[in-house]
Amino acid sequence: MVAYEGRGVKCKARAMALHLRGPVLVGQDDERPEAWAVDGRITFDRPPTVDEVLEGWVLPGLVDAHCHIGLGSHGEVAPEVAEQQAVTDRDAGALLLRDAGSPADTRWVQSREDLPVLIRAGRHIARTRRYIRDFANEVEPELLVAAVQEQARAGDGWVKLVGDWIDRDTGDLAPCWPTDVLAEAIAAAHALGARVTAHCFGEECLEPLVLAGIDCIEHATGLTEQTIPLLAERDVAIVPTLINVATFPDIAAPAADKFPLYARHMLALHERRYATVTTAREAGIRVFTGTDAGGSLAHGRVAEEVLELAAAGFTPLEALRAATWDARRWLDQSGLEEGASADLVVYAADPRQDLETLKHPTAVVLRGAVR
Image (cartoon, rainbow, N blue to C red; front, side):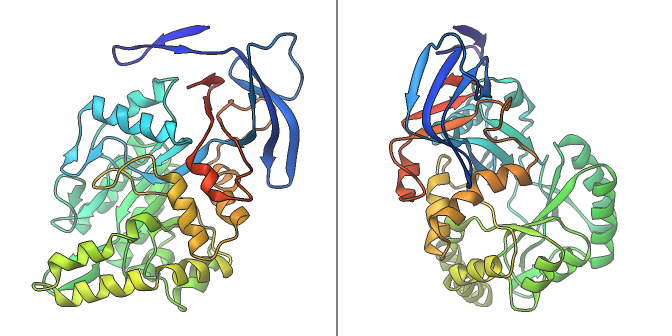
């Protein structure tokens, strides 16, 4: 047994050597009958003693590639709330989180052995008064490069831009940044070793961002037959956050009277959401799971996002890959390879046969400890 201190709470790991009696799904084409977690690491060599046996279908910890730790509906939340957000994700099997923007400094999460691996993007960067109040670092175009450099240094290899938002003058979604400034800003992030992603609901902002060198698009509801080949050609990934897109009718409803064009646009984007994601996948665009938890959406819903990909036409294996092996490689994180951190989830049945199984993990193991 080992013990360590959390935020005022002593946390105990339950086992030092675990026998994982599989199938152990190391990869989509690599299934092992068993494995072990010894001193927090995966091994396929039997240790001399075992403290606990876990039996079932073993997957690498799921990936929520778009969530927000430390963010609530009104901006930054207290550390104890951020802690509960991370615990909720962990207990749902999401053991690798890419935080897509938070006003809170959540680096302390990364020192907690009992919380998921967290890859931070720093704070959202938005155009002045063109995003949700108290969420973002709001700047005008002439300050975008400096803001990107600041967040690239503050984060863990990612920067998050707000690519479009409602323009009150036109009454509809509109791009936030001039193309030439985008190219300079994204180049500045790349020079500091950071990838750049952007919130994009509509159509107009996509081509300028891709031509400027963006690495990923969040939501991507505005993809069209013109921009899908462009993203595929330049290997720009998307994280469609379909459980967030499901709320578009609720977003549109209160805007219908004041901004009817915007409301109709949001409803149209919602209506074609599944077709958009399926067409993107068929074109060769890499698609990964993200819930957009934080803000107004609850944490712990990664299984629902996987099921949404299936509803969009992904096979169960394709949807599972988007939340496990493929997503981990994209984020430069290991899975269940020899010597990797033992971050895994155990299920009573094969998720490849029934994705609903993902809602009911029988065990969650993080850094070799049953949580």
